[in-house]
Amino acid sequence: MSWFSRRKPSKKTPLVLHAPRLGQTQSLLTVRHNDGFAAATVGQLGLATAFSPRAHEITDLICAHLLPEVKISASQTDLPHTIDLLRSAAQTGAGIGLVEARNHDLEPDQLTRTAVAAMAQALADLGALGPELGEQARFLMLAGHYLARRGEPALAELVEQLRNLA
Image 1: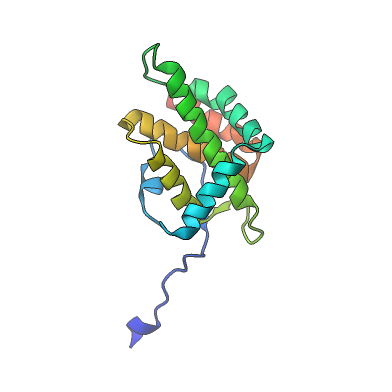
Image 2: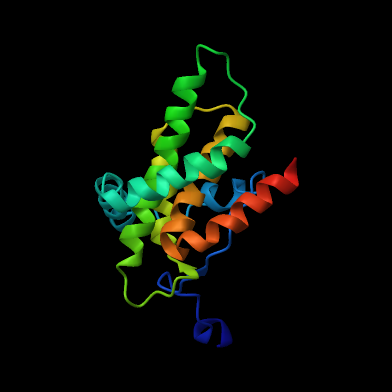
């Protein structure tokens, strides 16, 4: 019986960490990879780590270099709140990336399904967002995670990608 001997990919098999692309983040964080205890734990650890000095450094880099390149559609009244929401998304992604970086079995160009699920849960916790703002929040969360995993040299790649969209 060949169906019995076929192996399914392990949930522990890491995914390849690609640079996030604004406008192309929908599929990664909307697919449910794992909604269990592990994802909730990584999410909570990521939220706690998001307040670390390193996560703040990553978030500051994102706000200084990436956020100005993102076309935010918000009224003058809503703009400060929108920026705070996007900053929080980036900071949460950085926290989850830093937690994931502690996994010694993982290379910097890999991510786990558990981290993907933790970021998806964190995005769901932001509440209902419009399509454009939702995409921007997903992108900045993934950017925070990406920079936490790949380091500051990866920032240039993200900035270039955003500038090519314009």
